[in-house]
Image 1 (cartoon, rainbow, N blue to C red):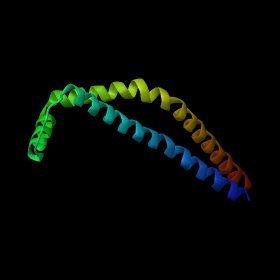
Image 2: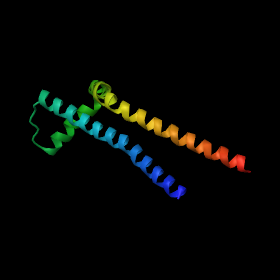
Image 3: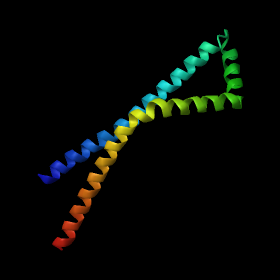
Image 4: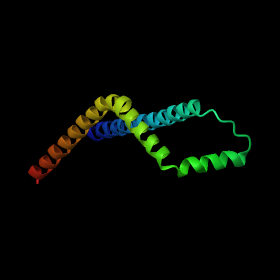
Length: 115
C-alpha cells in the first residue's frame, strides 16, 4: 500500500514538472507572435511572389542588427512578463523536490539501520 501511494505521489510530481515547461513554451510562442506582429505593423511592405518572400526573409536573416533587436526584445519581454509569473511555480517545484529528496534520505537511513 505504501508503494502504491509513493507511485501516485511520483506520478503527480511528474505532471507538476511538465507544467512549467509547457508554460514556458506557450510564453515563447506568444512572444514570437507579438514580436512578429509588431514588426509587421512597422514594415507594411507588399511582397507579391514566393520568390520575393524568400528573398526578403533571407535578407532579414542576414542582418545582424535584426537578430540583435529580436534577441533583446525577447529577453526584455521574458524578464518583464514571464519570469515574475514563473517564479512562484519554480519555488513550489523546488519545495517538492526538497521533500522528495528528504523522503528518499529517510528511507535510505531506515534501510541502513535495519541491516
